[in-house]
Image (tube, rainbow, N blue to C red):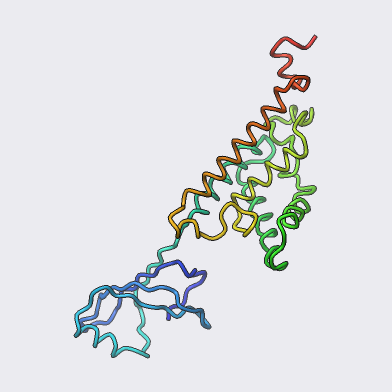
Length: 241
């Protein structure tokens, strides 16, 4: 049993025994979380090779408390770790401007993601449309994430509005970002590391890149389709008369 907070089932723990004047002093073994108990976790130790005499010594300590043992926690980082970072880079690249910096954007994204996850947990297994509707409610009026004009860095450019950036396209941009930065079954691109466990660790990243390419094509269609060229592009092309 060890006392530690936030130990997940996939984390591994390296335990170094501290038993002075004993052949087991300094003995190292690995353990996995077996179950949660009051004040800590019950661990399942794993030893690959062990001499019979040391095994008997170790068994003699069953039921006893061994103090001052050294514990190293090796956190399990799965595909959502990289996906989360990619999502935060995506949000910051999209929204950082002369009013809101990267730190504020990350904080707000985290806050909205936590509230969305809490909604899903309380609702049980909501449908995708219910999750997306709740996300829309959480984003409504959010001065950092809900304004499409935020993609322009300068305040003067933001005052001119987002032009041809439709609500539908902007909503798709928001959903992609939160699909990368959350782990919600049925909504997020990765929801718990199963892809890594099955040898498909790169699959969520590929999904994100594919959806990003689709957004790029959608955006290009809005910008360059006949009849909807933005004022700035028309001026550059000498079409503004």
